[in-house]
Length: 138
Image (cartoon, rainbow, N blue to C red; front, side):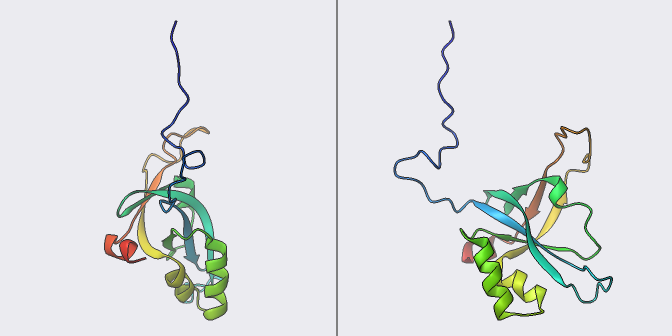
């Protein structure tokens, strides 16, 4: 007879005391939405993800594909990303680049080249490489 124990590797909600959860974050995209790539006009929180080391953010491949040319990705580890975006939008109206920089650290997306695959795609992964010093400074 085999015995099993509950999974304990991910226990943020049940740990006593609860650990800080600064490794979970948001992927923010800045892109052109009006056909004029010289003036990007959208910035929004598009996916979640997690830091896997000091300069690598793991997210899904479907979050980093099918964007217009010139898309820029930022990672925020703020606990309340939407409030940070709202505050930055009020401080920088009409300036998506300033909003992205105010809320997150800009990085470079690398999507698994085998994505997309079947509907339950094991290649639906991507990483955002970030400057470690900028992440640490936040």
